[in-house]
Image (cartoon, rainbow, N blue to C red; front, side, top):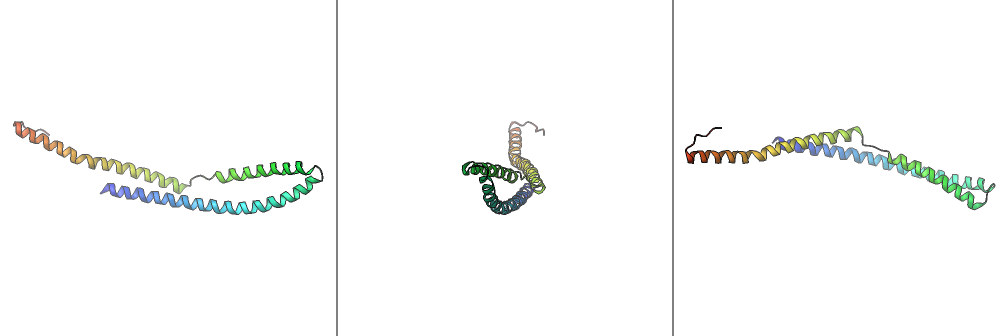
Amino acid sequence: MRSINLLKLAFEAELLRLRAMMARQRRRAGFAVIALTFALAVLALAEATGWLALRHRVESIPATLILLGINMVIAAIFGILAARSSPGHTEQEARRVRRQALGAARGALAFTAAAPALTHLLGRRQDQARRWRIPFVR
């Protein structure tokens, strides 16, 4: 019975961890969509303004290449910021509880599975001792 309760606890801890992880992923996705929308608008206006300003000093192709390099740097910065999210305290604690409960359940199940085999072996020893009329010592 204890192993069933431990398995239930492990299952509930895993559900809690998955819910917390999904909530974090939803927040990340929402923030990423908002940031992307504003970044695209800013980049479009910055592109037009920057290209017009650079066009006065250099030819059109070098001006376009300069703006392309700037856009790549900005995209890399936002990509790094989006990838830096780590599991929160709730996810880590739920994972720890799940591991402990599963470890304890494995131990309880191993003992439960070994008990019938042990009693069977002890019963055989008693039968053999009776057959040979040897006193059985536990």
